[in-house]
Amino acid sequence: MTQSRNQVSRWPTASRRSISRRRLIAGGAGLAGSAALLAACGRSGGQPSGGSAPASPAAGGGKPKTGGRLNLYYQSSTTSLNPITDSAQRLRLSAFHSYDRLVSNLPDKDYVLQAAQSLELPDPATVVFKLRPGMTFHNRAPVNGRAVTPEDIAKSQTYVRDNPKAGNNSFQVNSLQTVETPDAQTVVFKLKGPNAYLFSGTQLADPGAQCIFPKENLDNLETAWTVGSGPYEMVDYQLNVRYLYRRFAGYHEASKGLPYVDERQVLVLPDAAAQEAAFRSGQIDLLGDAGAGLQPPGLADTLRRDMGAKIDIDSYVELSMFAWNANVTKAPWNDARVREAMYRVINRDQYVSLLEQGKGKVPPGPLPSGLADYQLDPKQSEKYFKQDAKAGKQLLDAAGFPFDKEVELLAFGATQRANQGAEICQQQLASIGVKSKVVPLQTAEILTQRIPTGNWEMFVANWPGYDSPQVPLRLQHTVTNHIHKYAGLKDPTIDKQIERAEVTTDKSERVKLVKDIQIALLDKYTPMIYLYNATVFVARYKYVHDYQLNPATVTMYRLEAWLDK
Image (cartoon, rainbow, N blue to C red; front, side, top):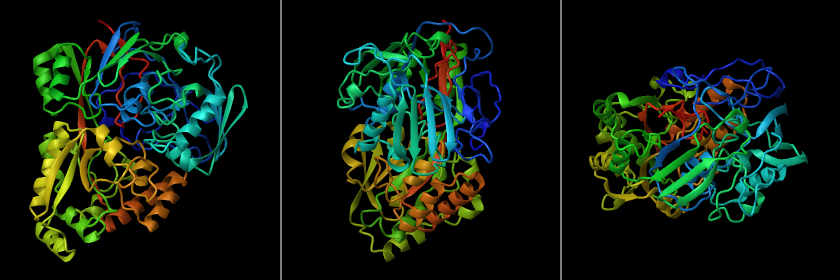
């Protein structure tokens, strides 16, 4: 496993069954790490293991109860209702609740069957899905509860592929060749070649890019009422204020009693103080499960002291990366000497100490520390991160750095954590004479107006957590297939190495390639410095049972969550 289980202090005690490898996969439980899920041909002599979402017993025993409302929150603003172009819809709202997809992932499985009743891999470039019978969309115009068809899936894939504003369409652009619909229950994905990360959270298990949309709404997903075939119907919303979802009686797992919770409400709460107040007053049932964990981390001890037996605190080392980025397409960041100077002065341990009270982990290279199998030996990379402000200043002098210029340093989300991270960076850069101005902006503004156009120089931000090396390395590629088009190094030689790793399904060979890529990136001082992975703390009321946490920022339906209050 690439994501060690001991990084997560509490997992729901779902019953698990082993499964023999088989050509046709339909309902067993498989084993894999959340960090790097195995590809279609990644196992010698067999297929990847998978499963349907099990109806697990409650954590600590007891029978799950149905009913109630689970109150959640999200801290970022939304620009639309479209989970393809809006990160909030993708990671917390509509993709999480209302849309179904063929498969999803869990931290201990290669994949979990969702709308697919089974899948078959007759060769490394073909995936055959059989759909669950009787699936319908929500009963709202213009879809009106009609049956889900293979055509909906095919057109959804085309829509994502051709959307220039897609947050992530790397599977549709880079991997998918065609979608065939030979009959009313079958969808066949023909791939351009082997995909080493096929079942990862950025490919077939991507929470947004794999949504099944009704074809009637594809021209108007930005503003059309959310209609899917997922476990919850959207019944009310006010953009950037509140979203209410209600259990869909026609959901394909409804016969098993899933989901247990009748309603889920998501409040948009950008302010950390408002989030804490809402949790303490019982307006929301979890705190810290909206991306960054409890902030500051010391809040976990405060809540334990103040709320005592009412709550539990769960923790894990996240796959999300706090990172420094410079735009290599702009001078002076296209000069390797300038980038090396940043490595000489950016003290990564200081971020962990000041932002996380020492509760975090600094990776040895340009991949999240949770992707354990792909990690460099720290001895291989220590020379790149050697602190030496004097040498950094000399490198800038040699490069003719414009010391009279004030560099714009963006802080994502305008949150306290983001602002403080940018201020730490500002102080570190000042030690070698680099002037900078911290500019806090809301995530939606940065992602729509700045990042896609390349209208930025430098930022400090918490990146989403990725469960494989696919996106972190693609961001270094000249063609990122991502809304972040200017994130990484963009070196043609390294581009080829990245492309080779993406089609290398032999795990041991791929691990070696990925490690070689990391060294190559460090040799050229990539402008994306992964600073650390935080230890995340999540508080929840004890009446919330079987709510599974995930070190990666990917949607899990969490259908088994139930309330006992």
